[in-house]
Structures are given as C-alpha cells and as structure tokens.
Length: 74
Image (cartoon, rainbow, N blue to C red):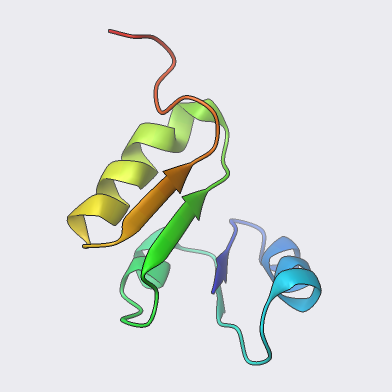
C-alpha cells in the first residue's frame, strides 16, 4: 500500500514500486487500518515523523523511519 497527501504521487509510487493491486490512499489512518499492512516505512519530512511513527506503532505495525524521528533529542 502507498500513502501520500497528493494522490497522484501515491499512484505513481504504487505503479513504480508496488505489487499489482497495491492499495493507494491519501490519509495515513486509512493505510494503518489495512490489516495486510504489517510494516510502515515513514518517508516524510522530519516534522511528521513522530506523529506517523507513533500512530503506526499504536496500530500494531512494525515501523522503519527515515532520518531522525524527532527534530531534537528533547
């Protein structure tokens, strides 16, 4: 599954990197509700890493987060 705020980017990523029939969405809550999704790879700007990573963990997903999860160690 692929998620992006801009639907066209999610569709392009699914076409380039996804398996046939990969789901596409624009709301990460929708992606996290898909039972078949076991792992979430967070590839967003740093400002949203914490929110998305924590939400995915709370949804029971494994999480890989690109770059730091937070803007500072605090």
